[in-house]
Image (cartoon, rainbow, N blue to C red; front, side):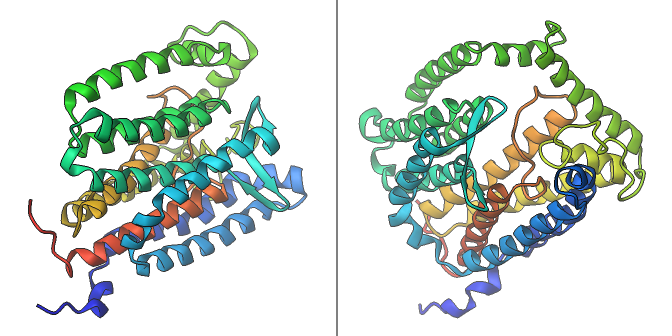
Length: 377
């Protein structure tokens, strides 16, 4: 049967595209409100960060459209060079990285600020998906199947943890573990190596005093130090923002917590500003959008025309959903304070642009699903 490739775009998942576009476009208003007070003091212009973010959103939408038409199967052979480039960027941080708040997570190249961990997490998802697709015949063998996956994952997570950025390393480890699980690795091998990784991660987590203070602050056992007080202060201000918002919110641009009460109001804690200004309705609307991305993303994975598309769609969907869940959990006090952004909403070019590229790839997989039906195994 002859396949009509020209009809690929007829099958793009419009639910995903509309949900992501809505989040990105509304994030312009969210960021402007959350950053106005800070930008006025730091830059002398309350709209400085607004225009920066708006430009990134426009570029991000263009990136989505580009990758939606770029055949994702061409990325399979490129996956290892892409991941090696990401590892190179992670190592470059220790040479020319910029330190802030006790960690080196950014590379500054003139006017461009680049966070390699955002690149690395999607590069790892891409390469693990390619490996899982190629290794299905012997995936249950430890040496040929699981070990290469663990080595790549360990390299990425280890370099990120050394920045130090334990929360991102832990999130990427969870994403990798989820991919290995759906990739049919041997569960006995998986359980043993998972236990070792958890034990090592736990030891690393308690090896630094500041991480211990974060955990103690979360469990209500703060030691009275300044850092523990700041951690609790952030959460208290975020909860005040949610409480002030009520059902319908105080209105766009009317947030009080953004006025130097809530640190990182435009970044990691922007979700609480959404709750304050748009209320319960706004918070639910944002979560519904991510629910749509999760639902439709898993549907795209199930309908993917090949194993590579299946694993890649699963990895992209789980990554975005996990980051959204963790950020919402941190803002509401369900989870300990971390530095993970809310996808598509938090201020930050690297996160927005790489998440946009990932969504474009997911849309391309969806466009192939109806044209190239997956052969059952």
